[in-house]
Image (cartoon, rainbow, N blue to C red; front, side, top):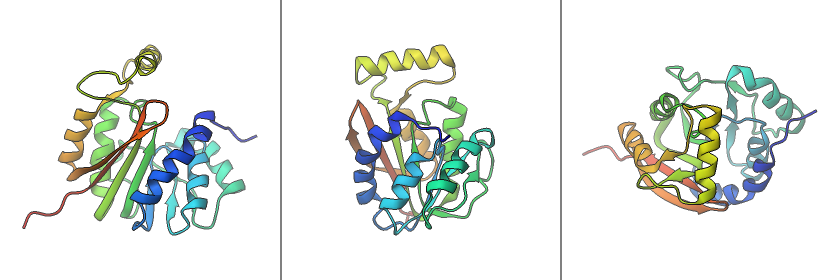
Length: 200
């Protein structure tokens, strides 16, 4: 029986609308933390110009592989075992990296390694799209996000909703520049960074 996350069913269409614009010129995407595979299957089917590479940490790979075997499209290859702490990531250079609802789950060391890995895995015109809840100026954007953050920290003190400004600094260190900040339903955002132009 396939594992299904209700949140993926709720947010897949709003995220797709953003990706259709932001990834229009990309041809290859690496998804970090593909989870149940619902996003990978849906986005690969609706973005046929892309090769969508799903990935997950080894311990969670079986559930992802099960969905891809049953529902995967031809532009959705076998899932990749990938831990953001690995250096370098075991993948070929890609045009884009996508991740949803991961940065508040992993510890801050994982967030740093996510941006470090993205900086090395992306091609020269690469783009990073990250979906989830974020704080601005150290403040929650809603009471529900504050409650969610408290739940996260009770479950794992290393986790928590990340500050936009901290992510911006890490992205800059990885050679990425903010390109867009899309408002999404349920007090979430999709942040988009692109490879910063080389200095002339």
